[in-house]
Image (tube, rainbow, N blue to C red; front, side, top):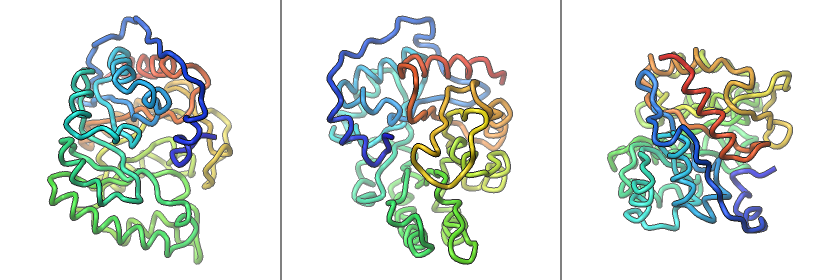
Length: 290
């Protein structure tokens, strides 16, 4: 399994290859529907981005997506340079993921990128299995949320499934994060797949935390897969949008009604070439009626 924690190590072992982009009919078509703007989280194309960031961004736009959500693989570029690379690809830029460790040091970088949202995508694994670990995260999020607000942006957390595992006394890490952070300072990027994997109802979660919900992540989930709280291969039932069991038309319509404007495709792994996978998911999104 390649995770956000080890992809740099694995990618360094990958053999070099030339990225070839399709010449398909989706090129340069705005990815919007009823006010929803669709983009791609750069983690999905992390291997290609390491080799040719400008090229893979142009491929994302050629597929038809209008936005990219940044990931640390791109942050070796100065902010002004990275902004220009994204603009030259014809993509918008409102959001970026920043690692938990060192997050505070990146706030000014996010401001200089012109972001609207700075997202923490995951807690360190050492904090997953205790309420103390989640309590520390809640304290950090509250502090970072204030600093990000002062810099003119919003702080968001991106969920997986481990947050919903009951800890001592049956309390979950998720509950700890929600109970001990200010909704005005700590918002959410809801990953619908990981909510479903954790046995949660995404529609109910979006409604319950409407005050916090700002962005959503999209990837579908294969039929018949068991739910659970563990990360790793046991949790990886990814597939392209429309090929799984998640009720996307209803969820996207609900997200729009709640004022969510941006949704990012973030299929961690694909069994077909990643550009082909993006094409399939984008074609599905285009078919959803506003």
